[in-house]
Amino acid sequence: MVGMPALCVAAFSLLLWSSVSGVEGIGVNYGMIANNLPSPDKVIALYKAKNITDVRLYHPDTTVLAALRGSGLGVVLGTLNEDLARLASDASFAASWVKSYVQPFAGAVRFRYITAGNEVIPGDDAAHVLPAMQNLESALRAAGLSVPVTTAVATSVLGSSYPPSQGAFSEAALPAVGPIVSFLASRATPLLVNVYPYFAYSADPSSVPLDYALLSSAPGGKAAVTDGGVAYTNMFDAIVDAVHAALERAGGQGLEVVVSETGWPSGGGGAGASVQNAAAYANNVVRHVGRGTPRRPGKAVETFVFAMFNENQKPQGVEQHFGLFEPDMSEVYHVDFTAASS
Image (spheres, one colour):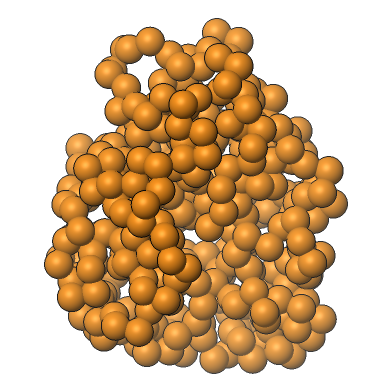
């Protein structure tokens, strides 16, 4: 999880779900940077009880994967960032990874995507992402499995995001992202992107309207951003469409975006961090993403809310307060996941 590029905020001062396997509901990230979380079987039961259809895991955990057997939940399974270099350089390690974490569960767990790394582009590990994806794909195929392989990026990959039609990858990110876009486009596999209007708002709340960041603008209300005749009434759509534009510039015409994280903190002292705002944001996202974006109207955006629990071993401040639930499984605030299908 990282903040929006400063360029997005500066621009304002001048002023889920179609997928390769069909329509999905709303997913929620299952982060585990905490020492007081419920057992995985209780967590998976909570997902089902709350009508959450998909789960994203940041690293393979065989206890969690065992709890997912027969659950029907769609699963996005990530690799550890620290494993990327070896996955990229050692095909036998990629084969062992698949043999340990995918193959034993594939018959009873509905794997949606395998993600090679999270938010490592741009950076020291960026060059490892594509070869890791290639080795994982080869290992999956050798095992007779057809799970799409992708990666998850932060919006820091964008060098330009305003207006959305001018979205473009940064010079630092493009050497890694460009070939990944080609890989994904040739397979019709989406790019996963972590989208956080909260960080753009909290960086400069005097310049970013809160309703725009919360998706709370009245239907048919005045657009906060007009881009070549296209009206944007919320920042979520503007960010996603900036990524769409960047993908098209990089040769990924028609490539889909999965929002692999989005959320709003309920506390922690940051600007706008409150239970009321967090509840408004999450419920607005659930109701909104099935409608698509102005650049791709009617094309639902597959979306994962961050995160299932407040995690007490994350950095102090808002990072500890993105959970929908407390570790005792009580709600921090209510989200109506059934609204995703209405």
